Image 1 (cartoon, rainbow, N blue to C red):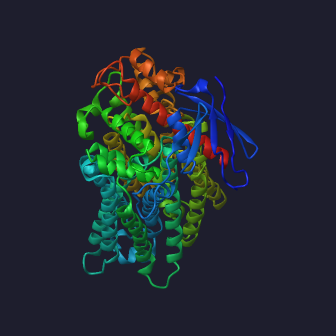
Image 2: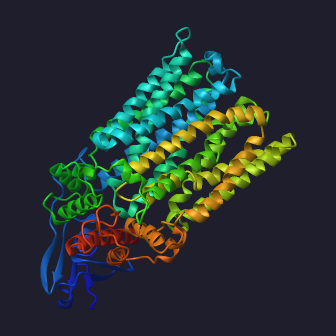
Image 3: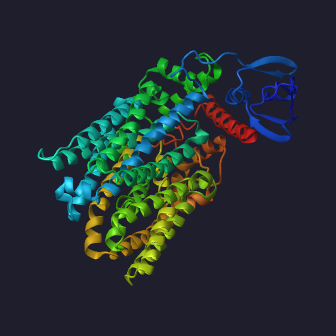
Length: 628
């Protein structure tokens, strides 16, 4: 195959890339083109189809490029952007706005996780709410009731999320959280203040449960294939930054001379995040996948055009619409509806096993002790290490700085280290950290207590780098298209129910068995290691179609799914379809993410469309890497 050359027609124009492509006659009609160029001294080779070549130019941020096919100059990309804009933005700026609003939702999630840690043990709070004073059971209940609200919010999305839509769900979640905060901060003595505070905290939890069940789905459906995993990891990491903000606001508010300010202001501050989320979501577009699944094709096409900053009649816009419609058809049900019974099926698709894998990751995140440390870090220091409240708050704030720094680690290594390795490293690190805390607590001396503090710091570092983001990413990957929405809602429900359990029992455990609490969590983390090693398949660099085949291979060939993930080679789209046919993906009931539900021989046009999308995204990613 001949290799075309790229020529820069205007080298004097700074920032301009390559204007024309000369493709030899031998490549005309060939589905793939190998394009090589030298730009700013660096050589790159990009493999793409003719349509993908147009996608690459669009994603490069240039509105017009010309291409020579067989010696004839033709337009590859038409001029002009999308006539549809949201907040006067389209294309990359709109994508950035979507990511910013989505990230704010998880920042609010993290803030809520950390805000009660410095308040629940504050003398001013216990004076205002005397039921919590030196009452570990009541302290646990006031803190943990929030998780019950979150569970209710997640169940609401399980039942009503598809009908309400992603954007309206986010707006509703933000509004409910603001309402709950107002109820909390308007408590007054003599008017059943404690009951009002508990009700307000529960309502705030409902809003957060709605947000955490909706935002990852919305972000994924408005993102390109190549950056969905990274964006979800970033959302998970931002939780740590929200907790960091909460800790230091708690610490600063504790210095106030006004007793009520100590707890009212930290709780009220989260209204800022709620307003950004609710108002921002109002101006954002609805998910194009959700719109098309509800047969609102014109609106869906307009959103696609805005996301790509192209006219609605542009070939790339039409291509993306077709690909999404094919993906919806792959679910096996019109209107995007999936029966609950589909969650419990086995066979080659292993829907039930995959739902359990995703849900178990959320369960293990909680019973590993993360929120026992995050929620009760100051109490742990005050109760088991005899620190003053001020010293405990200061150490808690420093611990959250460590937490936030290590939360960014997964952003850089998630596709290199893989999911299994990070799960295993995190479990080992958390286990050893808890053992260190336990061992240092036994002597009961100030010097040994410092060693225990080091153990808590190393624990939160390992957690931030591994178990913080992974349970939000793994369920989204491991579950197939047909059951993903409901399976993810169930995994989120498992997260909040187990979160409630741990937050409720931790102060009781600390009060009764003191340092035995840490050996309990060390044992839990040790139990995770064999579960992950023997049951969790690796999904690193796998398309959703390949993950389907991992489970089909394991079922058909009667081998473990971990072994199947290792033995199945990385496949091209064409190879995926061939292997899918070998494993019998030919009927609608067993179709997963392969999109081969209605016949053993899918039309070549549909296959080519998916191939073009994947190639275009890969080319875009290479172009971005070369320009950075």
